[in-house]
Image (cartoon, rainbow over all chains, first blue to last red; front, side, top):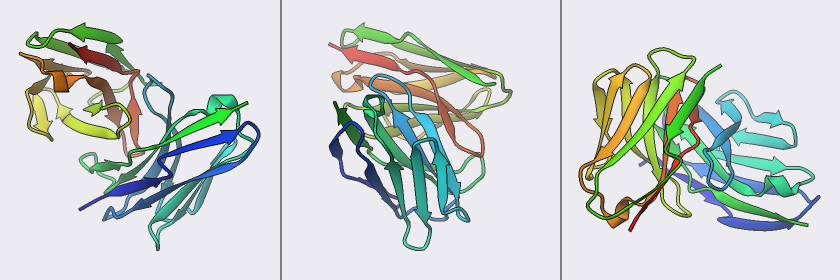
Length: 114
Length: 110
């Protein structure tokens, strides 16, 4: 069964600090892995997308890594800001066809405090 | 660029009442469209997807239904709402890169 597990479930950090969110998956075959940011009451917005051959992708202060051998990904946030408070969702796509299924993690809720 | 719209943004309905949520996409043709539900503090659950007009696939058996009357319009409906239908409903379209989500509809069933 395809699964995506994220940890921690929630995280509280002080403004300016760094943090790393984890995503482990068992989806097969693997097509791509995406990280989304979801602000409260809003739709998720894509941060990064990585295919099998990519092991790191950056988007501003967000850096995602992928280890396809161990089926792990991480999202590192540098110099956190209050606006980073949100839910971060890891999504793994099973294949690159339009019918390919996506498996969603339950998300990590990040709270950045001043 | 592609834009996805959902309405209404929020909705409060009594148990047993009907439901109709609408989603429209601009800037793309023949998109694959999806309805997801997100319960409070939980992940996204795929409800329906559509690869074309009149083509609906259901992922989870429930009292909801979906229709695609036009290429860029996707509708989520129910004849009689249940308390358990409360949640955050997201419409999305997808290309090979990934899903692009609408702003969502917050549904509260009382």
